[in-house]
Length: 168
Image 1 (cartoon, rainbow, N blue to C red):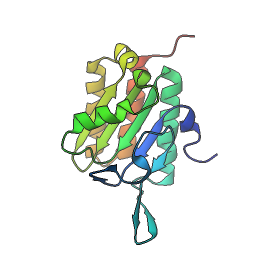
Image 2: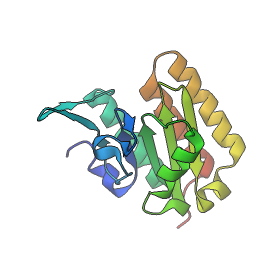
Image 3: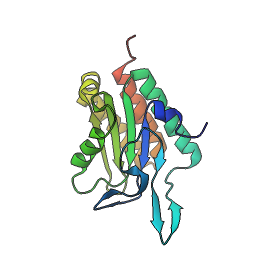
Image 4: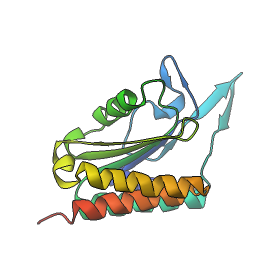
C-alpha cells in the first residue's frame, strides 16, 4: 500500500512548496483527501519538494488515519505558506475539505512560524479552544526542537484524544 492510500479514507496531508498569486503550487491547491506533495515545474522538468522523508510521511499518514478513525472527525494537515492573512487562508483551506463541519485542519507555515487550527461545527463542539491552544503549544515546543513530524503527530493525538472516541 502506498503512503496516502489509507489517508484517502480518513485524513489528508498537503505539502506546498510556495504560494503565488494563483494559490499553492502543484497538487496542493485543495485538500484532496490523499497525501500529496507539491511539485515545482520549471523548463519541462519536475522537481519534487520533500520536506518529509518517506518514513516521516508514513508516520504522519498513520497519525492522520488513527486520529480520524478514533474521533470520527476528518483531520487534515497543510504545510506551506499561508500568505499575509494566515487565519483567513487556513479557514479557506478548511472550507475546501469535503465535509468541513466534521473537519479539523492543522495549517502550518514553518517559514512564517505560524500554526493555525481550524475546526468545523461538530469538531468545535468536541474540541474546545483551550484544547486547541494546548495542542498548538505542544506542537510549537516540538518545532522549536526541530521535530516537525513529532510535533504534528503529537498535536493530532492531543486533538483526537480531546474529541474522544466516536459513539456507535
